[in-house]
Length: 225
Image: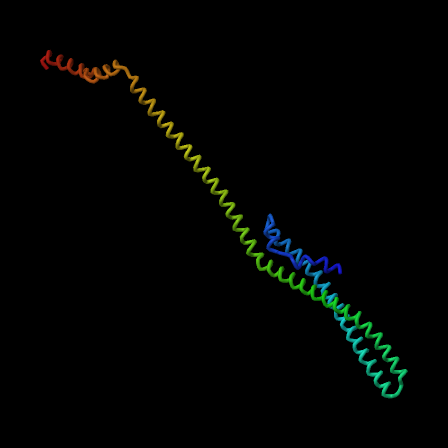
């Protein structure tokens, strides 16, 4: 039957393997659930049809067995009544029904196996869906944590870049300080000895105000004041 071929792979489906191969587990688990629920609807419908076929085959087989037993009872009564021709007719009908019973038993056996396989596929599919539903939140939770960690990693990288910039700025400032110190030192070294002497003369020479004061004192003395 086509439906058995169509859903044969469901029996060997490995949901964990599908998730492991997924590039985006969060999307894959949703897709798996959609696919499995879609398949479950088809499996349920076909399983019901095959189980109904099994019941019909069993009913036909049971009716055939009842008819065989009935023909046997009628044949016995006919013999007991001395009607061998009637008994023969009943036995001929019984033989025909017995031949049909073999075919009906084979049909019922096939229908029973098909129903069992479809029921097993249905149960497997339900179990897979329940497993995915129970793991769905866990998978999505892990993906959310992973994305948060990824954002934190990028932020850490940015902070490290800022720290490197600050360190580079500090190095430039240190170089500027060194250059200023070097320039001041060169200016000190380039200062001439004449400049030093002038500074010393200015230190020990009388200031103009001091000479004026001395001259004023001498003038007062000459005037008797």
